[in-house]
Length: 395
Image (cartoon, rainbow, N blue to C red; front, side, top):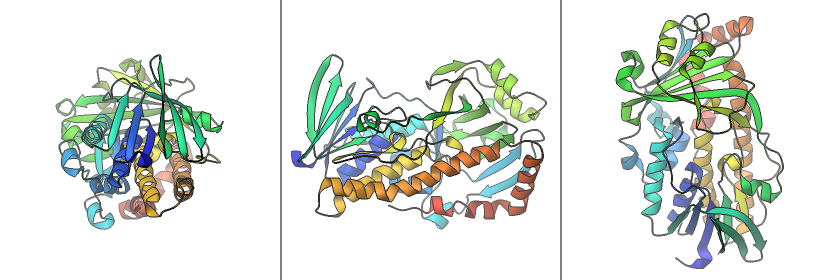
């Protein structure tokens, strides 16, 4: 592949790997840099709604993903205290309705499949232990300063894509000073073998429990072999790292017997190990890039997880970026501004909706009662229709 078609991607998370694969599919050469020495299977389960699964299917990854995914039949919404189901959103016809399936998968499994596809692609050069520390824009593209330990070097390309996450170095280098804000919530996550939970919780269903100042989500991943558990609660203390350990006793204290049904607490008693991390987002950035440089994923639009769209938006970004760069014979900077224009309104809406959804989940007292009545009155079909704008997206 000609050097004049080289695009540098900083960050080999889900967004960076997807972007690299999509760009290579459009005959670009990609230099993919990741500061971690190896890609570890970290994180929690994630939901791949049709807007995201459509992109992954288009990249030819369905067969590789098949052993790892679960296609949920429904979302079951329950009240924390009584365990009463107030709404059920059926997913049995999702593929027909949106033209793509709804999957749940462990983040590590998805990243491993993307990683395998990237290293097998001759047009992608993956450099681990390498950080894109800075960049300089010029008339013919961009020069990126790469650092590998104490060694530094440069890489030239026609564009630089910052996919380096919520604490993006390149966003700072770009001059975008707004930092993600802690939203006074902590997510506790655990992964357990499926045979350790009650049979009803092994079914291909996303379970959502709504409590006051807290909610609980769990569903099978790893092809149904394991259960992903995420418990989110109001918290004033920050835990920035994904790997901050937590104790079972603390989780059970936060999800106490007066507010949480026995079935939910029994599930929370199962994990031997818990990890916790604080939740951050930020207002939509005034700019994602300049010249031959742009941002994607959490680097461009950090968002709360209450809409389960963080990974999906990064996947959409990667596919849209590749299409914009391949559409017309024009300046790269013009194509990048077109990409940003196409993505900013949608991702801003997802950020806002995720924040509002979190507030609805954690209501208490009369407001929670009114919310529950609304959920029951709407029913699963009308609730799902509210997400048509989200799930029916195409590149």
